[in-house]
Amino acid sequence: KNILKGKIQAALWYPAFLIFFAIVVVLFIMINIIPSLTRMFLELGKDLPLPTRVVMGFSDFLATFWPLLLAAAAAGVYFLRRYIKTPEGRRKADELKLTVPLAGNLYRKLVVLRFTQNLGVLLANRVDIMKSFEIVKKIVVNSVIEEKIDEAADRIREGASVSTALTKADFLPRMVIGMIAAGEASDQLDAMLQNIGRVYETELDLTVSSLTSMIEPIIIIIMGLVIGLIVIAVLLPIFEMNLILQ
Image (cartoon, rainbow, N blue to C red):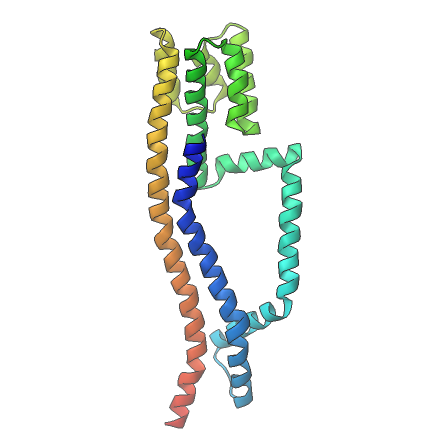
C-alpha cells in the first residue's frame, strides 16, 4: 500500500508543482508589477484597451483584498476538513473520489487492487472468509465501498458464492467478477485474487503515467495562455503610445 502510494505521489508531484508555480507567478505579477504599471498608465490620462482595464481591475482587487482572500481560503480549508471528519462529510468525499473525472478512474482501480490483492493474501494464509472481508473493508478506506463489502459479506453468510455476492454488491468490474468466478470454480480463489491484484497494479502504474503525461502539457498551455494574456494586456497601451509618438 505504501509503495503504491509513493508511486502515485511521485508521479503527481511535478504537475502539482507546476500548478503551484503558475499560481505564485501570476499572483506576483498581479500584486507587485501590475499596480506600478497601472499608476503609470493613469498618469498619462489615456483611454486604456478593455483587456488592460480587466487585468488592472483584477490586480487592484487582489492587491486590496489579498489578506481577506487568504483568510477566507484558510477558513474554507479548516471547515472543509472538519466537515469531512463527520460521517456525512466522509461519505460525500468518498463518493466524490469514485466519480470525479480522470482521478475517479484511477481511484476505482486502486480500490480493486487493494480489495483483490489483500483478500487473496488473507485467503492464501487460511484466514476465514468472513474475517478476511472484515479486514479488507478497513484496508480499502472508503465508506461507500465499505458498505458494499458489508453487503457482500452478508450474502456470503447467507450461503451465496463470493462471485455472486460481489456481483450484487456492484463495486467491481464485470471482468474481475468473471475471473473471481473462475477462481472459485477451480478452487483457486486466493491465487486468482492475487493475480487480479498484480494485473491492476500494472494497470494502475500505466494509468498514472499516462495521466501525468496528459496533465503536464495542459498545465503548461494554460500557464502560457494566462501569462500571455497578462503580457498582451500590459503591452497594448504601450504600443498605442508608441504609435501616437510616431
